[in-house]
Image 1 (cartoon, one colour):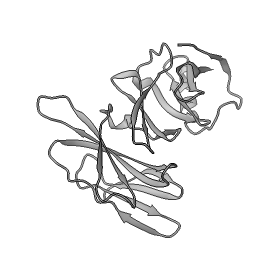
Image 2 (cartoon, rainbow, N blue to C red):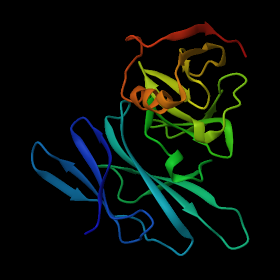
Image 3 (cartoon, rainbow, N blue to C red):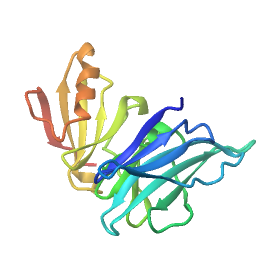
Length: 228
């Protein structure tokens, strides 16, 4: 039996993946659990250059439309991999639209971090590079990273906490949480540090992913603005 994976949910609608994104025979469904209705999306043809894909499901506040994003990683002999982003707007598009190349080679970096109407991710090869895709305008841009960030990509993760874009760093004897208090403003990055033991580090980091804000009894070491 093929696995079913939740791609995302918006306003009561659910987007589901049936099968593996490494397999051309996978399917994507939009489901309305309240009405018990669903429909299957028509996916683009899987050509020989495609080696893997990833999906995201989002809602545009500007247009009031739901969109499915499809990150396609292509591999050509003797050339570096190329990632392209395709968009399908429900109720509008008859075909998937290619909106251009994006700097994201690894699928697990195409994360569902939505802040200020945009999807965000980091480049695995450049741990100080943050990118955003505006769901309404469908424009891609880079955002300034926290100042002096030296963390390796596997020790950091983008998250949304309290409607702010945040970056967590859990590589040392503490968990650092960087918050961009004013979206897009480099000088607005601030850092909070939670002191933990090595055995506690992972559990503290994991618990942060489900919090809207953090202040409930955890030992905050510092909270000060850092200027770039």
